[in-house]
Image (tube, rainbow, N blue to C red; front, top):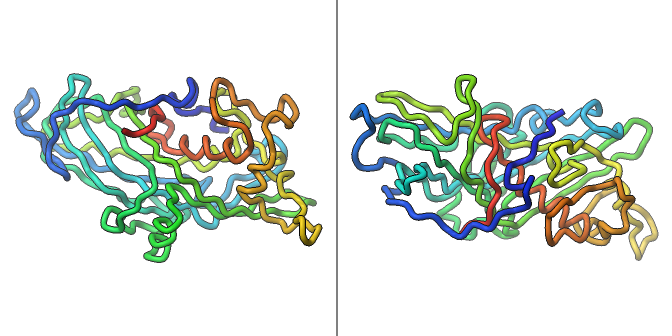
Amino acid sequence: MRRNVLRGATAALCLFIGTTAACGDDTGGAGGSGPDGGTGKVTFNTWGEEYIEQEIPASEFADGWSAKYDKFLINIGNIRIGDSEGNEAARKDGFILINHVAAGVKPVTTLDGIAAKNWDLVSYQIRPVSDPAQLEVGAGATEADKTFMIANACHVYVEGTISKSGEDSKTFKWCFSVATLLDECEGELEGKLTKGVVVTEGGEDQVQLTIHGDHFFYDDLQSAEAVVKGQVLVDADAEDVETGSVDGEITLEELAAVDIDDLPPDAYGTGAATGVENLRDYVTFLSRTLGHYRGEGECFVKDPN
């Protein structure tokens, strides 16, 4: 079971004030070259792993539920490569809309002409996009998906079903609208924890911006020992006030009606996180922690400037 959470989430969400950088052009290339005088490139891709493409099986849930996504749309973009001395090597403005239910690793962008060295600061964003010109339709997504994401100001939109043997299954359709910067990313490269990217002369560093779909079911916002649970969310599916029946869909409105303080003490942990008063706040917080780096690698979760 994947237990890690992003570094920014383990110490509460950080506020991003801004960085100083010598900007290159919109698609790559810092002037000059690295210590060896050469340049290389960095290719970014993304993957939702089997948990999004197939399902989160009951064996991964602490309470016997399982979850399957029918749609997992996310806007990824505004990629920056730089160093701790304030230099910016390359950037890619704008976003690409990916449906991670589609199988396989999916391309995001390639930045070329980068000075050969270890650039230790890499960041990317997941956020709502209002300008159609700033949102490209990527793997698994459609123009209709793009229209929906813009019209509803979603940075992430998920549809799926949570099920348990012998129990009624529940569906969910959740749109989240929070701009998030995933900053100072680091992950394992050739068996070593590495900050940012390593550009070699004539070479290519391939970076995966990995999306973790099990985060929506974590039972703690900040603990590295968080486990995957479903029962609390399932129980939020309330009777309709007009019909008096339960419709089988867990809505964000129903989640908003469940105060965190009214749950059993061991149900969900919030740690030092602020502004998390109900279950909608809770899953919205988790929607900001989906993005990882090179698989299990981590980034600081911040508010973009």
